[in-house]
Length: 461
Image (tube, rainbow, N blue to C red; front, top):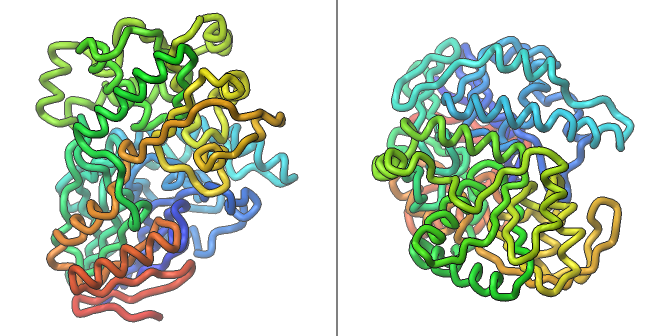
């Protein structure tokens, strides 16, 4: 007996995670994400899935980023009737993220003259089919197929998923692997029981510039420089994880007297909701020492001189607060959300500092700014770029080249690695390192490829 895996998304691409694993009787889809970045097309995302949706028994989600969940409601629209498995916090985050995406995707679809990918009713149906996935437990999700979830330290509730067939053959999908150490999330747990491992490679060919205490010092020193300039500090931050990381570190630095208490604004309704969920699930999913910190302080994300701005009126009131001030807003690649209005207003000011604290997909506004574009189109207007840019890859939620290799090295049973979820050069580089350093077979699959996995090896079908 064998398992088959088809790479419907996430092969040759950072985004669009979508892997179909089939046994003799059952079919499990791991992730159902949307593609993002320069080459992503809403028209292409609207095309029917390349597999029989009604034949899928279960959808298992590794974590709640849109490139892993963004097309899940579309499954419902096309006839999926199975259950959706994810950890408790992932289900909570999914509900918020997908509802937030409905109107944005509808706008994109309208510009292309096509029907929306899905609506609120599809999100409702998806969430009604949700089943909480326990950590460290074997859970049957389809005829002849079970899954086992381990934390990956990427974002709240993120897991790797190991699928087991009736004869014991196993395939694991990492989802995204966290950058170690995370201040409050546990480190990624090794996968030691997979015959084949599908792993991410976002930073497969790069090292983060600072780690641990070094990255904290670099952030502090850059914030001090920016505050001294007297202007506005803009931090485009992903609503999940990056925002919480920045708030945690800024809070600690101000409490320790390392930073002056300038006004700090979280100008993102979505990030505000997500932060509340981080606090809700901290007791089960945070590190032990941080749980103790929470007992003493009540919150690790909120502090004096910090303000949530839920309404648009509150957001516009920030304009009247003189600098220096810090504004965290979405989206993380400057491709939407409230950050666009702030960038249009403040980027032409040479006293402004733009902090880039996460991965910027090729073609995204954030990537253009990172690469030094003199002008940028924001909300239909051309904006001249005079602000100073500070870059921090060390705050990525993804493991870097060495972290990924270390993770792979702990997969003792694994004979074959499928290197996915990375730009082609990054995936190939990591695959070569796995081969050279670990002596294991490493394959960079192409979109649509089908592979058979047995206990003794793999073969392309």
